[in-house]
Image (cartoon, rainbow, N blue to C red; front, top):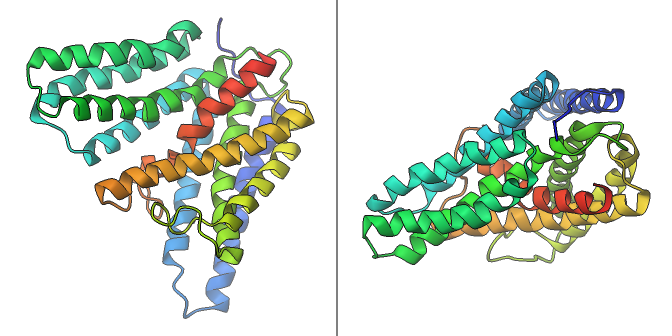
Length: 313
């Protein structure tokens, strides 16, 4: 099945809407700095500037074409996996195995490019799962073997297999969806990222009861429920523009993305807390690393993909 990517009018208007929202954010920050000159808005400014950069790169990849888009998502997976490997303790013997783990990234995205769904869906969960420990035992070091292979494969599943579902939305047939695969990607990314922001704002404004205080102390029930509400509303507003979904499916997708995004963020927070770090890196000023930015997508991407694939493709 060939991949078709175009930029129909709904996608163009949505991209313009993203940059309009960023422009309003920049204007709002400028006004706040004038109204409150003694308040430090450095972190907010860093976050907004980084959002401009990320939105620009993301939009460029979508506009140029499917090959560039897939390479972009492969690079995101590579950087997220690299950050993950740099955080977890590894044995000296594992360095030879890491070559094969990194090789799984271009192979996984090649299956996306060729729209080979059968291999895409089993390559990392089955073949990499079986082959990596075979290579590890060939080295002969059994000390810490179970922990080493478990953390390695979990990292591949999280940063490569999960994120690659975002790219495979491009391979879905365009029939029945005016916005095509690019529309589905925009729908998922906008809802996932806005859910993160909504949960933060609701939690800061009304949050009192914490959900998982030992894992992520800033997450509250008010933030979680407010994020679900906002995400469902946004899903209903965008579904007719960017997806083929009926309203009841759009509402269900909104709940799915909001809840799974919460758990994706919390799971990566648990990993970082276990390791003893605040951020996975410093590549994105104000946001941390790539893994910090895609943590929610590690859950929302595969779950949304299989949700819409089941009902519409």
